[in-house]
Image (cartoon, rainbow, N blue to C red):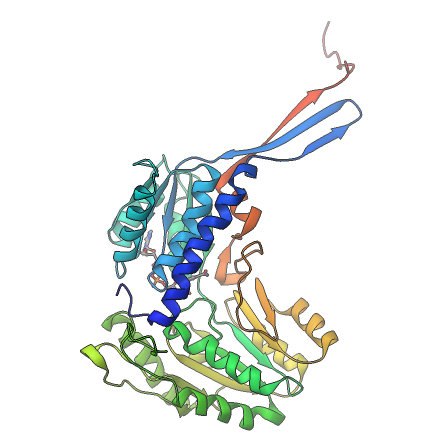
Length: 398
Ligand code: NAD
């Protein structure tokens, strides 16, 4: 109801929200622990303490789950939180605080401020009492937050946009790869930072593979988000729908061919329904191959060989995730080493394992979430060195 995202995915995301709290709750007792480092006549105790009140600013695409992902580790680290959710999706953020308070969290530990980004969000990033900002959203908003927080030397953690490549070699399991390609762009309405919105396919199987993806895309059920059978629901807002449709027009005018979808469709409640869309015969210079559309729109490009695939995949301002499909283990190791992305899945769709680091390189972010990486962000590390022997101290004066 907050976003128009289909129930079948959001019911899973809600479970993930609970899992995020359980995961960090289990680790909370160890958050302060550090290392003991000894030298000959010195004992170092390294520990962590909560950094202080933190600001969490979140986007609208998966608002419930993404909020838990930032807030759970902040609380487990011992910080208090001021959360500013996106203006398009205020409902689930409210629900979360109510759940937390009814579970016994003292009032004032987790605070919710609704408001506009340039107003409430800006105030949070400039406030001297806020020690760090955990932000999920667009890359250009991240850049603004960096500037706004400069005077108060804010620590920032950014999870930003993506234009993630899926690279399919001819030796891959093409049936599974086609299902993964469809899942990774059309689930969650394509409003997903880790969606594989650029599809690179080896030339010898390009026609066959893109035809399979197009057929699957055409068979996806579009409908009311609360219908459990719905796969693609309405986009969140007419403003966003306009953006997605304008990219579809742009793709056509750039010379790419529509192999599936390519238009708005009417649906229950008169929402912002856009058909799952596949562009073929595109090239990497087109804006539909370079810019984040954040909707159910996939751009497919062919490649000749491994080095060209790598060059094309890396030729983009983003570097959040990458998906690689091949049965050649050595190639998978070689390619993943060179692919510019914070997270890479080989022969798999996006399956998140909570202790692993989550985050991007290049325009996709600064810092990592997950496991101990989250605690490092929400805490200060302090080292205390004890002398264990009376060292001779240099006398600079008598
Ligand atoms: P957005 O950047 O427009 O807004 C995100 C949040 O920032 C909102 O709460 C907004 O109110 C706030 N904001 C806007 N201007 C601000 C300012 N000047 N100061 C402080 N706060 C401000 O993003 P969106 O449209 O809500 O979400 C979509 C974007 O989020 C996409 O780019 C997507 O890739 C990204 N995203 C990234 C991840 C990730 O983990 N990397 C996950 C989900 C979404």
